[in-house]
Image (tube, rainbow, N blue to C red):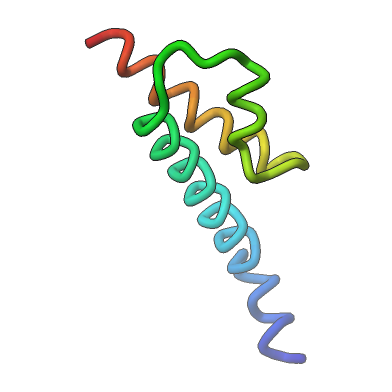
Length: 73
């Protein structure tokens, strides 16, 4: 119990949550790199393995960022 209290005090839990969300965003980025550029919003939503926020929003942010980078090239 002391270990958990110490983790909470140091922000370890917040850091691990932020790291997990960053990995989810990277998953979205990687999915977009493999996807065709002309996907509809409905098809993009169907690709997203996360159905609830904040995970779904972070995956979508990664996906859209990758698509934006592809369009500017």
